[in-house]
Structures are given as C-alpha cells and as structure tokens.
Length: 542
Image (cartoon, rainbow, N blue to C red; front, top):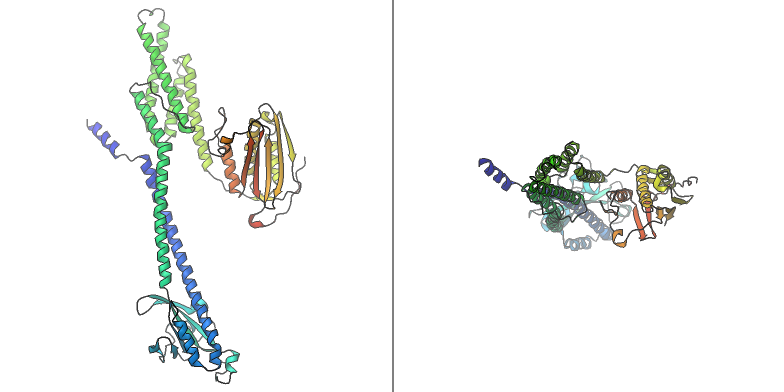
C-alpha cells in the first residue's frame, strides 16, 4: 500500500513533456531576447549621444560662421543678439563665449558674464589638460556630459574660435597673427529628448519581447501537443489496454512520420496477440476431443502463448515512450529478435515477427535520418566549375543499374564562370536529384542536363527528366522533411538535405513538373560573393 501511495504521488508530481519543453525554451528565449534588447538599447543610446554631440558641434560651427562678419565689423552687440536668439532654441540650455584668458565675455546666462574660469574647469580642460593649450582637439575630446543645477543630464561642446587671416588683418582687431586661438564658444545642450526617445524605445522592446515570448511559447505548446503529446498518449493508452488483455482497440494512425510507423507496429503486434489468443481459445474448446490428433499442435500453441506473454511485456515496456523514441525501439528490436531466434517459435508466426523487426528498424532509420538532417555542415567554398562537378557526379552514379535504360544528354555552357561552392556538397545535391529522376523512370527514359548563367548573377544547372512527374498537390511538399511518394524505399530526406545545402550556398532550387510528362529541377547559385567577378572556366570535355 505504501508503494502504491508513493507511485501515486510521483504520478501527481510528474511534469509533462509539454511543460518541460515550453519552460526550457522560454527561458532560453528570454535570456537571448533580454541580451539582444540590452545591446539594442545601448547601441541606440550611443548613436543618439554621438548625434547630440555632432549636432552641438555643428551648431557651434554655425554660430561662429554666422557671427564672423559681425565680429570683423566689431559689431559685438549684433553678434551677441544673434547668439542670444540661438540660445532660445529648444534643447539649448545656454551658450557662452570665453576668451583666451578664461574670462566669460558673453553668456545667455547673464549672471556668469565676467566670471573667470580655471583652466581645469569644464570647457577648458579639453585644451589645457596637458598644461599647454592644444590647437586642435577632436569632437569627442571637446564634448563633456554632466548634470546641470537642476539635476538633468546635458552635453557640453567647446568650439575653438581661431584667429584667421581676416581677423588679424582687420582694422578693428589687435590680435597678433601668431596667436592661433582667440577664445572658445561653449554650448550646453539638454539630453532630455534623447532620454525620452530611449525610454519609448525601451518600452517597445519590453512589449515586443513579452509578446514574442508568449507567442512562441503558445506555438511550441500547441505543436508539441499536436505532434508529440497526442500520439504518445494514444500509444500509452493502447499499451495499458494490451496489459489488461483488451486486444480489440487499435491505435488510429493519422501521421506519416516515425510516430505513424510506431503506431502501425503496435497495431500489428496487437493483431498478432489477438490472433494467438483466438487460436488458443479454439484449441482449448476442442482439446478433449482432439488430444491424440493435436498433440503436436498443442505444443506449438504453448510456444505461441509464451511469445504472446513476451509481447505483452513489451507493451508495458513501451509505456516510457513519453520521453524518448529510441528507448522503446530498442526494446522492440531486442525482444522481437529473441522471439525470432527461439526454436520453439511457430514457423507460421515468423513472418509477423519479421514485420515487427523491419518496422522498428525503419523507425530507427527515420530517427537517424532526422539526426543527420539536423546537422548542418558549413560549406568549404572554393572556386569550382559547375560543369566539372556534374561530370564527377555522373561518373559516380552513371553505371548504376537504374541508369542503364536512361539516355543522358549534356548541354553545358562552355565559358561558365567558376563559382565559390563546396564541390562535395553539391555532388550530394546532384546525386539526390539524378536518383529521383531515375526512380521516376523505371522503364527507361531520358535526362537532359543544361548549365547557363542568368542575369549576370547566377550560375544555373537544370535537370529535366521524362518520368512520371509530380502531382500539383505534392509539388509544394517535396522539400519537406520525411515527405516521400515512394512507399517501398526512402524516408523523404534527400531533397530536404539538398535544399538546405543550396540555401547555405546563397542559392535556390526551383521545380516544375507535370504528371506523366516529367520534372525539371533548376539549381541557381550566385556567381560570386559580394558581386566580385571570378574568372571563367572551360567546360569539361564530352
């Protein structure tokens, strides 16, 4: 009873697969999205700060240029009025002019006119930081960021007023020609607008992050429930019913993936168990009348009963399918092989055992194919002739029996340029396409291969066959993983892998087909990265 209570508590505390997947994915997404949002906000802040400093610098230059003529005329009143007008612009806190002695000769803040600044104070230290005045200082060195008396962040820009030739040759000025700097124009600009923009942007990023996180979590939950949880629960229910001895219900197979294959294997196992039980019951009813006649048959039925018990045990074992697919597949293969090797096995049932083994191996092959498909290898690109890659492919597979009754014609562009591709990966693409073409023409036919350039952007290879063609409803699915129209071979990954390879090369695949007329695949690959020209290569002979 204690064990039963502990088992019940463990069942209640168990976290579902959907919850684990959703929580784990959400945490990963949240971390990356928060990091991305932080980088974006910091980048925007830096850009806006640089823009504010640049605007302040341009405003300083504009003031100096616009008051230059008034200063030449010694019309300081008019020049100061112009500066006062500029100081009323939105975002400008105040503007002041400082002579070479550090005296504030003019300021839009009246109370600081006439005050002397120390060389170490803001506005002077960027030129006097080393003890000697600098003739030139960069925009960033002339800027400073601080908080004003009201506690608001501002940026200050000090702009040197140079003693140009027009200044020291003017009749009203007395500055010697050797004096390079006459003074400094210091502008203080508010950063409130920048902080407001950053705040709005931050709020939008937060809203978008929460929205995307919720949307992705809901999508993961929905598809996991639909594609994994529902089939697994159906298999689990069927396993429990088999354990109770109910062999009438079958798993409804609605998918064409590994779950569908596993469901079919379960249904075949259930049918075998039911058939064995029915036969056993029939033999039991007539046992007394046929003891002498069916002694040997009874021994065979006993062996069938032992096998049935093993299959029931296997059904209980597959209850752990909620977490992994490989574990129950291993159990099925192990027990099925044991039953197949048992000399007591009824020969009439050996075919059923072989079906279980084949179906389980097919599921394992699909899982392996999925793992291979998920591993994307980076193309090792180098300038290569598309014509030579196709010739190497034809020499590799052209002698296979499926090509004996197929006529292959070539139409290569002789001056086709070299293109940056991974030759080995492209051979894999062409092999998949040529094999598909040969399999669509079991009675023979023809394949036409053509290479050409398109719009000076792509090197193209076109493969046209005269096979059975592809129906319109299947045409959009041929690049989907595990989609195949071949019931006897293949797991539907060849074209999916080819599509991924071409895509990683920056190219694309196009397909046109008509039923009973043939199919044309066109592979388009960029001539060169970043539009650079690559020298042409000769076409392979033949």
